[in-house]
Length: 433
Figure 1: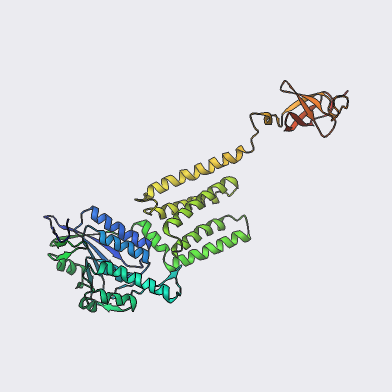
Figure 2: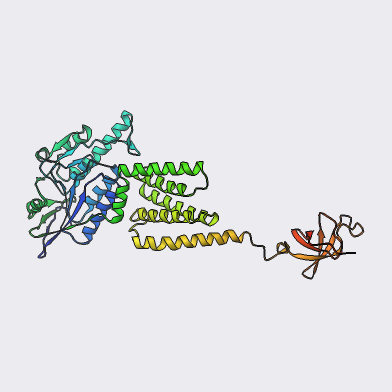
């Protein structure tokens, strides 16, 4: 549709409204949930996407993913800071201004969006040049979409450069926010029949006289990952990881502490945002394969194998809908492939290791450990100056040598083959002359 064209979102059926919730920090798990919800709403032909938000902020990369999906959404997106007492601070301020409609409940606030540089969740100090680069990048990014939305860009920039914050009334008066309403129902009623301008420039009239709200919750996997990134959870994981590896290094052979510590440490590094979500998943799968190999090589009483199964399941769950797996794999497929893969890996690796001890079946090497009979004594100077004799083996005569003299008729065993010379040793009592 060309820019400036008008589109009416109306239908004889109830207007479908898809509701999403941002109620914590903006991190990769939250971004995945919001992005997936927006995509699902667009595929279902939703008339409106409503994101209720209460957040202290979060990661810049995750924030940009969410904003990108909001700007690209076919359905209009409303961001509503609610309930009373909620906030849209830092990254939440950027997300609020990116919406087609920005709404706030009474007693809420937004702003304080100055970027902070951190490593592993801890703020770091930077020089003035780098600080200016970060601020200029953030304000330019804000202008790129806030100005087409008709926001007050000059006032919005002060939230970044001066860390200013605004109440809901100040945000409306300053043209940072469009509406102040006290409930979701009042918001939908206020939007019914309203004409809005989308990011591409086209206008859309909302028909929400009979809204049917469908709430999309986080999946079980997303709730699990969201729990891991909580400060209490990753602190415990970090302690378990360090203590487990310390116990294994100081008491080699315990196995279980090392396995648990390795898995916990990888999860802790992911929770602290040191490892990206796809890297953490790949490392867990690599750890699983290593544990399977160790289970086949050493006697771990199943601990190594069980740890490998847990690591592979966690790695598969983390990789679901990652950039590597694209659309993602289901939990059933992850479980259904992990267990057979674990069994096959352990069994095949044990066969490989056992095959190394098998005697060769072709070539002269197959003669090792075979038993023959001396036909020409070994050590008889008249036969050969170097003391070599002859041995009858499988109906063939071979030159043979030994560490001691061996008489004719003695039975010997081949210990090694050197070219066409057999090195033998006597077995049993030597024959009487």
